[in-house]
Image 1 (cartoon, rainbow, N blue to C red):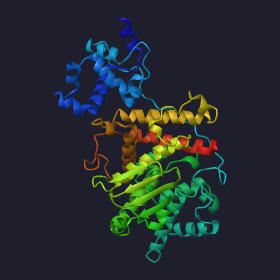
Image 2: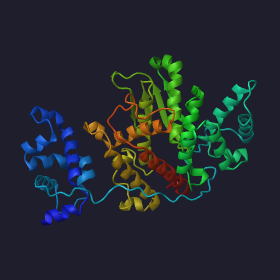
Image 3: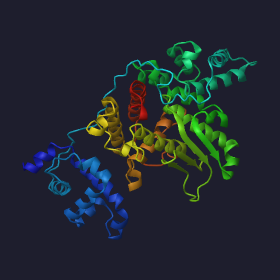
Image 4: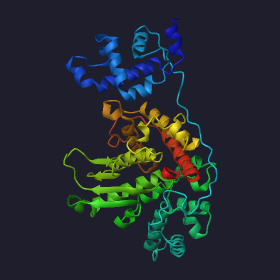
Length: 437
């Protein structure tokens, strides 16, 4: 066994990972390679020199971070190519993705300790909250059915925008959670899934995205009700007819459903929406990270969830003071960054590392047909679309018309993301977020 082979077997790169890397980088460069008559990555390997191919492998930042950054110093891309051609790469990677479940403790939540508690946002006072709750908990009869249904919807919306709701009602958080679940219409299996994911998680950090999705998916969400979640919603002249008509009702429900499916009372108070058309007709939605603006031109749940996924990815990075890149593509937010270690609690940085690893694992299951589809931020955005469909137990997430990319995300990925959300809720409450750190 050569010393190169011995080192390779101790590294994270295997034969299958090498082939995956080659397929990805081939697709990134496919346009000009096809012009040269090279139609597969195998042909590229056969017809080009290891040196030229290695330059392409090392020049793509995502490829380098994913496959090459952690190799032993003695090995470079050209060495991997030569070892692959000789059949010297190991069959299985020495390291595989494993998620470590977090330890989440009960957290005292003060009036202004959490970022989603906006003092300027209109919230119910205790008397209003108790009146709403009293109506919502009435037995629905023909004489009061509409009033009770409306109160229950308002209870759901308040549950996801007012962290102090249980305190205003004078009841335990666990009792409020039970009421929310009782109105959701969940199947026994769905309830068991949600209960399993919340096992040993304190009430204030539990996730009820399946309950939320089951309920809100059957409701009409009016413009003023959606307004309470976000900074602003601008409806252009081109978008007026659709937004204030039946299509708009569907769009508002898609937006609210995405917020409530993700749950853990994440704040969207800095997010704006613009409803209208793009100059480029093929563009259905877009997220602008500089002004936190999502523009929607397509009444489609895929578009809505995808763009909110981009927003979350950037939001998580901003929590650490990085304003120009998404967390999925920000490798420097970790426990080895000396500048961050001085001002950010280690547990927060460990969460960022877990998030980065989670997206890297998603990339191993994602569509690799182009450079665009391989981008970590795009992969995460598509996963958020998958996640919101997973929470909606009335639909089948494997429906071909809804899987608009060749991703192979799983239910286990959704379970892990719930755990990440629960842990972030706990860490934000304990240590603060953004400027509070």
